[in-house]
Length: 171
Image (cartoon, rainbow, N blue to C red; front, side):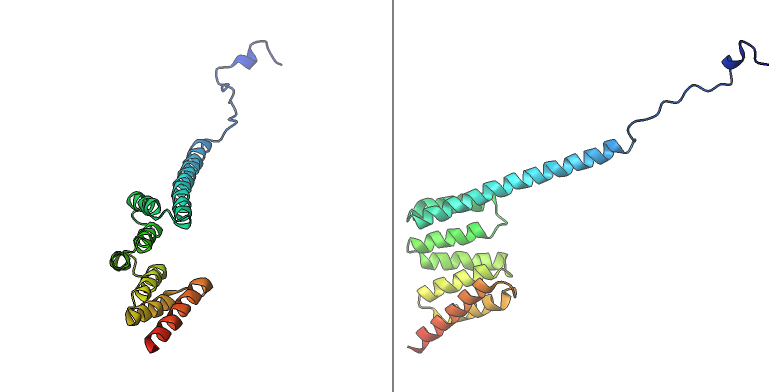
């Protein structure tokens, strides 16, 4: 028989509270939040960089070479590991008539980025403008050899440069 005080025995455990949230949720959410912050920061970095490149290209296109070159120099200082601003600085120099200095700058960039065919291709174009046909041919051939198989446009430019330099050399 059951008596009045039986269910209040000292052995009875306190009722367990069920957790609605797993203890792993906090670290998982922290890692995901960190990933989102890094992604957002990367997008802002690229956005600023791309806007600067677009603005500089627009200035080149409108004939404002000094302003375009100043913007490329600024981008080069802010993003020293990127190749595009270095190519832009050389383009600015060449468009202002300083082709020899542009070639010298690109010589240094080739040393920093030896596997980037865009640098060698640009140097070949400027050497061709200077009448340095044999070094231009060597640059175009090197750019062609460094191209990836899917980079048809740059390969075509390199081949066109080779043909043009060979024709000029034969004259």
